[in-house]
Image 1 (cartoon, rainbow, N blue to C red):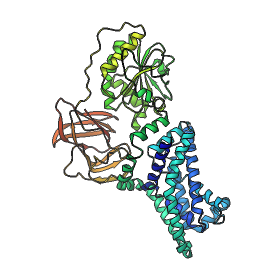
Image 2: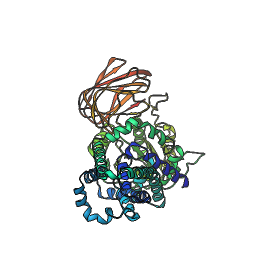
Image 3: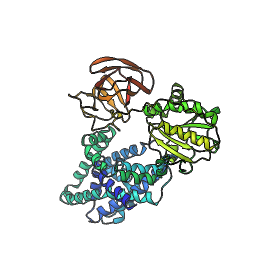
Image 4: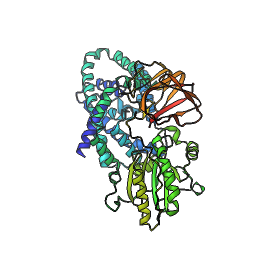
Length: 553
């Protein structure tokens, strides 16, 4: 735990030197400058640490319980920034607003209690950019699983973030002594700065700044929060399923990896009688294959022929497959989309919609696709992540059915394994939230802003770029006018997740390769063949089409 606390502390320091912390710094400066007490900055920062820790954990639970929007805190913080800016620019407004809270904001400068309360009031304004540590804390809070270790990790993170702010506060207080004669003017300047910061956040310019400067915080995170050791410890704090991950068949018997978690938080069921819910208790006596998937994931789609064959061959012998549909993109949350996709993909076994990731988290799952093989007593006997190893998976099914006394067919299903064996271009996301900065080249992306982009020359292998007018959102790129996309790929097959309505023309090394009519949010095949290509793919979009991600085979 001490190692994890150290990781949390350093992650907090990284947050405090990232651009997303800028809106808080003027508030810290103004609070410290309002008093000559040398201890006042320490009291402010102590209040900030205490309130941020309590608020982060309590707010996550509150938002989850009330079903409030995930961006509520950000919007509240923006509003507070505008109010605070107005009170600094217009002193009379400050007096009116301070009257009900005189004990908080009008205490004598040397009063440490007043400084602590002022720092505590910044807990809502302090909305740092979430990395793996803060994300883990938030998820645990939302799931009402806040234990001592979670509180300590949040405290370590808050202290790490507060130390650079303490240095800023001390420096601001020292500088304010020289400017004290011009106090009212100084307050107005700070008010203008705060208003500008709020406006920047409204138009997502804070995110744009992070992208312009963003490489340095990502590089720091890579060496702290994203290391294998850190990820392992965070998984353990979340209740990671290391036992399931270690599932391998050794010797003549399959290991018993413990009781399988039941299905949790499923909003809808498909392909069950009357769409009624399933439970593992109700499936006792059967061999159950729990398959985590999502309908636009090509890796998941390539497993479906094997699942269909197993379901047809072994269902009568006691096999049940349960698909847990855990969405990756926003449109995959929609019941109608999932219902249509299950029909189009010939998924005839029961499917549960795990939109809130509750079953995913119960299994501590991290992959699409992932298969968990459960025996007749409800115990996990094997887990497999990703594609491939279909022969071993079928042998597992047959062995578990034999344990159940079933007389399984002598012949296996024998579906060909379509898992790519060559090194191909990796999965490529097109929204700014998961856009790989090491592979994107060209005009700097401005999140959620309509702007013109231009192709660079040349385009390195596995790199991608935009041209024309686009609006790049967190998960998708929206074509606006003259929108084109190029990607230098190395693969046999090319797939892309598209949405909206319109047409996409495809060119391979400048030669027309046909077009795709986009009529739904789903996965589209652009290229499929036996020959391995190393070429430049160009897509030309009609306005209104959304592009989410590429996958390759």
